[in-house]
Image (cartoon, rainbow, N blue to C red):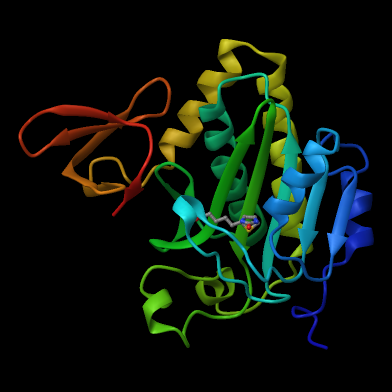
Length: 258
Ligand code: BTN
C-alpha cells in the first residue's frame, strides 16, 4: 500500500497527544458516518473535554449550513474534539481556523489564507472546512482537511476546492499535520481558557492577518437573503463589517461568503 494512502498511524498520534489536554482519549474508527455526530453523542453520555474522534472514512460527513462534506477515504483528515469552552464561541471559530492554517504552513511550506469565518484556503481554494456544533455547555469542533488525492477528476469541485497534494504536486504523510493541528489547538485553547484579554487580542490579530476576505467585493448568502458589498473589516467579536452597495454598514455574524 502506498505510504500516503495507508490508514492513519493511530499509535503515533496517541504518543504525540500524551502530554496534551486535547486529543485524549483518542477514539479511532476505520469508517464512521460523521465524527461530529459521534463526538456529540459521546459528549452527551459524559465524554470528557479533549476526547477526539477520528476516522479514515466518513460515510455521511456534514458541512456548515446543512451541506454534505465529501469524504476522500484514507486521504483526508476528519477529526472532532469534545470541548467545554468557558469563553465566547467566536474565539473557537478563530482558534480553529488559525491552528489549521498555521499547521499547514509549518508542515508543508504552503501559505494558507482564511476565508471568513473559518474556511482555510490554499491558492484561493478550500482545503479545510470546520464545523462547530454546540449543545448546552458542549462544543464539538469538527475539522476536515483535504490532504491527499486530487480534485482534478471533479471539475465542479476543483473550481473551489483543492487538496494539499494538488497544491504541493505530491502526496504527504497525514500524521505530522494532524499532530501539529492538535498541538496548536491545545495551546490556543489553554490560553483562552486561562482567560485574559491579551490571549484574545493576539488570537484575533493573527486570525485577522490571514483573512483573504478583507477589502474584497463579496456576496453574503444568509438563507434566502443576499447582501452584496465590500468586506471592510472584522469587529471585536469577529463579525464581518460589510459596507453594502447602498452605503449601509452591516455586522455579519453568519452566512456564506462568495
Ligand atoms: C464546512 O466547511 O462546511 C465544514 C466541513 C466540516 C467537515 C468536518 S470533517 C470532520 C467533522 N465531521 C463532520 O461530519 N464534519 C466535520
